Image (cartoon, rainbow over all chains, first blue to last red; front, side, top):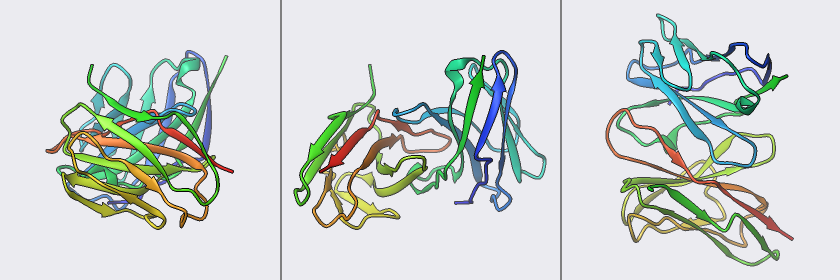
Length: 112
Length: 113
């Protein structure tokens, strides 16, 4: 599975959009981009995933560049409860998520 | 409600003792995983199992053992051979097939004194 690179930390004002970048320059054509978040001392929670098209759900939007070498997770109106560590991973569909490397993620702090 | 349950949430053991962490899921998922997380760091894979009676080592399997006798259960034993067992342990499961996401338990925080 491809390795990902994320900034260590980011801040965002409450009510503003939070844009979290992820680089995955070695991604293969059959690998999906997944985003999870982990609130302190809890298990990670799935947010969204995509292959090449942009995706949106009730939690967030995922923008994947045309060359698929990077992506951005967008939380459109960040709240204090969105403060968490956000992980970007890539993995091949039809295989186990366990072989995916989570890395250290981005610590997002939403400030009042 | 379906989900994945880890117990206990907090666990204390004396150095040199083996300890077993429980992970149960009623999601009918085929694959299950164990991760370790140290303070301020990401998740590292210990063991995973894609089917009953089969499991594979992850990146940091030394000092750990698992079993997968039932689809619903994937217990992790932290043995006395694990040099630094104090950590936060997370279990996850995944339904087989394409385009699926992993579900995580709430974790067990193990402290060895």
